Length: 87
Image 1 (tube, rainbow, N blue to C red):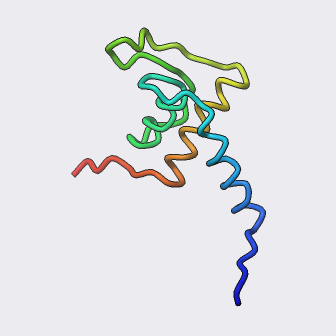
Image 2 (spheres, one colour; image 1 turned 120 degrees about the vertical axis):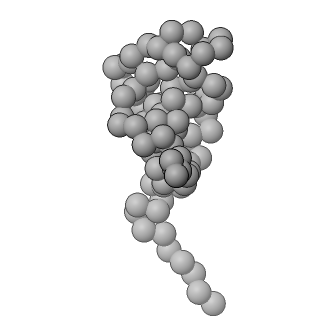
């Protein structure tokens, strides 16, 4: 019988993935904008809104919890998501 023991990095990735579900994921949210920036190959630039519809104007953020939520979306897409194919 083989038991795989996770490395510390693997454990942290699981914790991040589970924790990410507590973030608001609606269109234009911090998490959504982070994952979209990663998907489209844009640099890290914490913000929310500014994508049309009812998301309101683009708002830059710098407080720790908002940046953490944006980065959670960005990091999740970097690790598990795809990238826009511009071909």
